Length: 259
Image 1 (cartoon, rainbow, N blue to C red):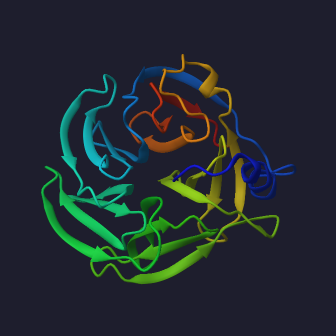
Image 2: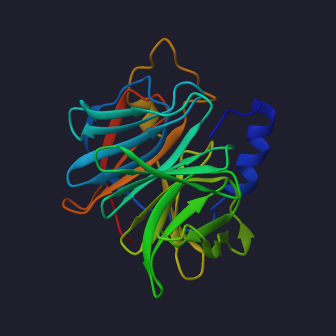
């Protein structure tokens, strides 16, 4: 999502990302890979060993398929200039992409050819998918403490998950990734990832990635208030996560402990 005034940031951060009594999961950095500093990352996912990425910004929003470890672009698509690209997920042979305030989602094939559009009745932030008793569901965030489930065939709402920590709502949920039976969520303007139980919506743990931004040289275009941690992709082959931030020069492969 977008930047916010500095005075407000401190208040929002302390109010929504506390986690004093919630466990923090450890991790180790496996490797670092190049990431294009022009890409304002909104969605990130790994599919068949390739990295799918959506980026934001009016007149700058794009969808990419990249080589996972070199960052080389294999395919790319420019979204209409009036659309601000947001979360992305792939399901079967389709690529779903949200927009921020345009009330529109788009579906592409794996070659990034547009197939159809659908309406979304809220802001679009993050997107993933997960199995449920009713079948596979898309899961989207809108910057609130709720996650919304959509039927991928009808694109209609089928339910929602209220995300809490110790009974308090966790606001500003952004980029999402379903992995290891839970949802991993970026929290906008926070260096932490929330690990959310899909049944209860409870934040089981946090992953504090605050040190990652100190591990690369900042480009001349760096804006600390905007270029925040965002983007979580899980690689089922290695069991590792790949994380980055908006306009970061690096993509990090990390191994997050399960407990």
